[in-house]
Image 1 (tube, rainbow over the protein chains, first blue to last red):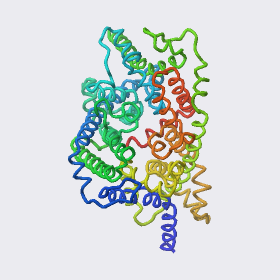
Image 2: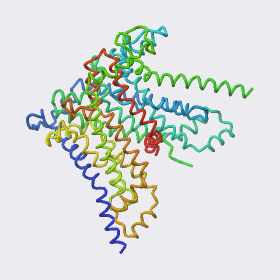
Image 3: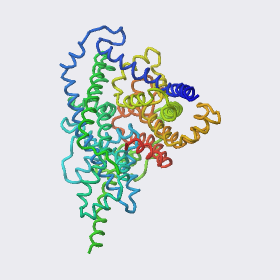
Image 4: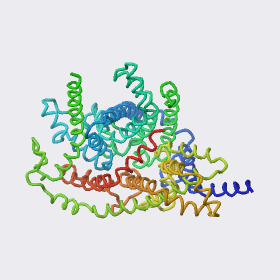
Length: 294
Length: 276
C-alpha cells in the first residue's frame, strides 16, 4: 500500500516538474552543447557551419580586443561591485535607525532601482552631457572643472561605475532585511561589556551580515560581468574601446560581423570565467563568512 | 549634556541623509523638469529647474513623433503573456519540488539552482540560431515560450513559498481522495495570492525592462517594444533632450504608480531570496 502510494507520488512529481525538465533541455542543455559545437566551427549564418577545430580559440587568445574587453569588464566588475555593495550597506545602516521619517528616505533611495532601464540610461546620458548636463552644471556651480565623463577615455569606466550608485536601492533592501535579522540581545550584551558603536559594528553587524554580503557579491559579480545593454546604448564601446565590454564584443562578433563560431567560443570562455570566479569566491568565503546562528 | 549630544547627533544624521536623498531624487526631478522645457530652454545656461511655462505639449509631440502607443501595446502583449507563462509554470513546478517526493528531486533542485548561474550570452547565440531555424525571428515567441518552462529564479521563489504550507493540509486532501492536480489547482493556488502577485510583478518588470531579448529577436519597427523603440529614438534625435525626457517620464510613470500600489510585494520579492 505504502510503496504503491509513493510510486504514484513519484509519477506525479515528475509530471509536475516536467515543464522545467523540458525547458532545461530545450533552453539550457541543448544551447550549451550547440554553443560548444559552434565554437569549433566557422559559421556566418548564411552557409552551414564548417568545422575548423580550435581555430576560434587560437584567434581568441591572440585577439587584442579580447584582452581590452576583458580588462574593461574586470575593471568595471571588481571596482564597481564592491563600491555599490558598500553604498548599499551605508544606505541600509542609515535607514535602519528607528527614527521618524526613515520610511520616507528608504523609499527615496529605493525608487531609482525601479526606474525602467531605458529611461535611466537616457536620463544619465543627459545628466552626463558635457555641455548642458546636470553633472557639469553642478561642478561649475561649485567652482570645479567640468569633466568629459563618458566621452573621456580615462573617465568613461569610472562614469559607468558612478551611474551604478544610483541603482543600489535593491541591495540596500537586502541588507536592511539582513540587519533586521540580527537579534537585538547581541547588541545589548555588547553594550553591557562596554563595546562602542564601532566595535559593535565590527564584531556583531559585519559578521552577522557576512552571508548576505557573500550572496550579493556573487550575484553582483555574475550579473555585472555580463554588462551589455547599457554600454550598447550609451557608448557603443567607445571612446577608443575604453568601454568595450566582453559581452558587447561578443554581440558585435555575432550580430555585426556574423562570426557565430567565434562569438560562441567567447560564450564558452565567459561561462568558464564565471564558473571559476564563483568557485573562488565560495572557497575564499570559508575564511570570512560566518554561518552560525543563535 | 547627554541629551544635548544626542540631539546634535540626530540633527547631523538628518542633514546627511537628507543631502543623500536629494542627490538620489535629483535625476528624476531633472528628467521631469527637462521634459517640460522648450528646446531652447533645454540648452540655456545656467538652467532653470522649474520651467516658467511648462510645455505639456512635449508629451503630445512625442506621441506624434514616435509610435509610442504601438510600443506600449507590444510591450503589454509580451508582459501579459510572460506573466501567464511564469505564473502557471513556476507554481506548477514549484509544487512538484516542494510537496511531492520523487527520486532525485533534491539533486534536480540543485541543478535548477545551478542553472541560474549560466550566463545568458553563452546560450544567446545557439538560442538565436534555433529560433531562426524555427522561423520565430521577428515574432514574440522567443520571448514568451521559454517563460512557460518555469524560470529557475521564480520557481525557487514558489518552492520557498510552498514549503511553508502545512503538509497536514495536503495529506488531509489526499485522504479525501483528491488528485495531485486537484490539490494544486483548488488548494494550493487559492492560498498563493501573494506568490502569484510577486511572480507576475517580476515578470511584468522584466518585460518592461528587457532590452537584449527584443534587440536580438525583433527586426521590424512595428514589432518593437518600449525599450528598443526609445533607444532608436534617442540614437536618432540626440539633441532633442526635452522629447527624450518626456518619453522617459512616460515609461517611468506606470512603474512608479505600480510601486506605490504594490509596494509590499516589490520588497517581499527582493528580500525573500536575498538572505539565505
